[in-house]
Image (cartoon, rainbow, N blue to C red; front, side, top):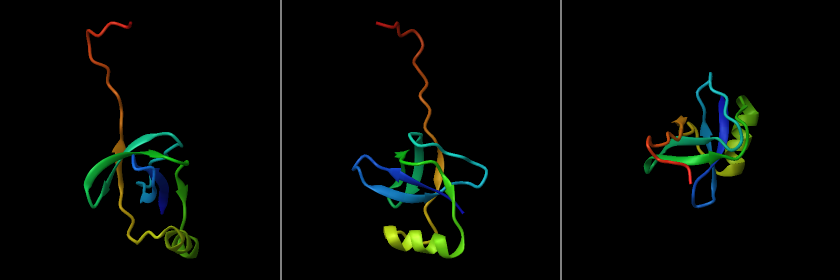
Amino acid sequence: MNAVFIRHFDNRQYLFEVPENIKLKEGDRVMVRNRRGEVDGICTCDSFELEGSPLKAVVAAVGATLPLKPVVGRVCVKKFEGIDDV
């Protein structure tokens, strides 16, 4: 499983599942799905692969549950047109 730790704006970190073909980097802003719906957060590390016993150990150590909630996308900023630099 491809996973990553995400910090929400309450400064707490949570473990999320990342789609297999996606690589995230520390500092990336992402959108995740949790019990509150889709919310944004920041990757606190690069995404990483875990399977079997190591996955279960990390999940237990951080108080997460399987299946992990998913990362659903990256957050991108698109500047408004017509705004001059100051």
